[in-house]
Every structure is written in structure tokens, then in C-alpha cells.
Image (cartoon, rainbow, N blue to C red; front, side, top):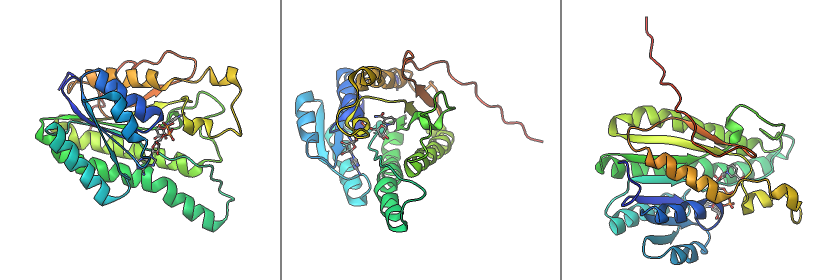
Length: 262
Ligand SMILES: NC(=O)c1ccc[n+]([C@@H]2O[C@H](COP(=O)([O-])OP(=O)(O)OC[C@H]3O[C@@H](n4cnc5c(N)ncnc54)[C@H](O)[C@@H]3O)[C@@H](O)[C@H]2O)c1
């Protein structure tokens, strides 16, 4: 599948931020989009997009919600060929936190960032296969890329970091296994992007001149459309970076590894 137009896509965490921008960009490119979020505001986003969008309040970490979401998307738009695993949670966690806080933080972050990713992807793969291929795009972070700044891999977000490294493992494994079904699996790994999640790091407003340097969600959404436009012969299994202060582009495809056996 090369064209974005006519695709049926699911975007999780689409009530705001990057997910909202992904949903708008997909619809602008002619895709039909099923949006989900735990936040009811997701319905207003779908209404603003118009006939190409349909919203559901759903928690990606809940099996029943995921099954309802996938069945509705497939029914409404005649199948599913694109899944954007965007819903994610961030919280400051430190290895010195109390045991009880660490366990509560684990559930808060891992249930969405990993269990949700697993549930939704597993539920979507049969639908994407039935369409002859498509895309899973996992929304990761520049933390899983080689460090370019002191800000990379903040030591006080150990669980968030660990969740995105594990997501990376899913991306790599699924890309290899699903290639034979023409399903590509890639991750977008952006640096600081101006969303409520990032602004939540600050007490009050961040300094305006600092915030002005951040990447705009719409810029990452364009990168997503470029990735989908590559079609089924495009890259798979890649972590695609986006860096503050640098042009946001897909970049060259990484050379395929040749398996060398004895
Ligand atoms: N903003 C950044 O700088 C940045 C950088 C790197 C990666 N990311 C990643 O991008 C993704 C989106 O981040 P954002 O900055 O737009 O965050 P955000 O907090 O602004 O938006 C996330 C959305 O996900 C929803 N959500 C959370 N848990 C959910 C669940 N269990 N089920 C359904 N919806 C759920 C939230 O309600 C919210 O609307 C995340 O995966 C995040 O880790 C963001």
C-alpha cells in the first residue's frame, strides 16, 4: 500500500498533542481515521476533522476497550491498515522513590506504554494482514537513539525510559516477523515536542524563548506521512529520529543486515 489516501488508520491518544496532529495529518492526506483516548475531548477532535474521523473513548491498556475499538474501526471504515501507537504516559520516577510509589508508577506507565501497545498491535495485525499489508508506527523518543545532548536519558525518568527501550524491542521483533505480510513496523523517536506532556515538566509556563525551539507536533506529523508514503517497499524496523534544531526528515534508509551464518 503506497497511498495514504483511502487508508483506514487508528491513532491512539488523539485528544491532544502529537496524536491530535497525527489524526489531522492523516485525514488531510485522505485517510479515514479512528481516534481513541481516555480523555473525552477526543470527540471534539474528531468533530473538528469531519467525516473522515470517528472517535472513541477507550483505554489502550484494557482488553475490552481495545477489542471494541478495533471492531468499530474495521466496521466503520471497511478494515484497518495503519496503526499509530501514540498513547503514552510520562511521570518523574527515581530509583530512590519509595517502593509503593515505584509500583504505582510502574502500572501507570507500563500499562499504557507497553501493555496498550501490545494489545492494540496484536488485535490489529489480522486486520492489516487481511488488507494485504500496511503499517504499525510506534511513537518512541530520542532517548533510544545515541545521545546528542545532556538531556538524553534523564536519570529521573527511569520507568519512562525503560518503557521506550522495550517498545524498541517490539519494533525490531515485529518488523522481522511481519515483513512477510508486507506489514512495516517503525518507530518515530522525537526530541522535545511542544505538547501538554512536555509543558507538564515545568512549574508554570516554560521560558518562551526556550519553548520556541521545540519541535511542533505538525512537523512530526509530516514526517509520519512521509514514512507512510514510502509504501510497502519502504523501510521497516527503523527508529527514525527528530532532533530539536535540526531539519525533521526521514533520512536515508539504514542498510539491511545480511545474515551471515557458519
Ligand atoms: N512531547 C514530547 O516531547 C515527546 C517526546 C518524545 C516522545 N513523546 C511521545 O509521544 C507520544 C505522545 O505524547 P504527547 O507529548 O502528545 O503527550 P500528551 O500527554 O500531550 O498526549 C498523550 C495523550 O494520550 C492519552 N492517553 C494516555 N494514556 C492513555 C491510555 N491508556 N489510553 C488511551 N489514551 C491514553 C492522554 O489522555 C493524552 O491525550 C507519547 O508516546 C510520548 O511518550 C513525546
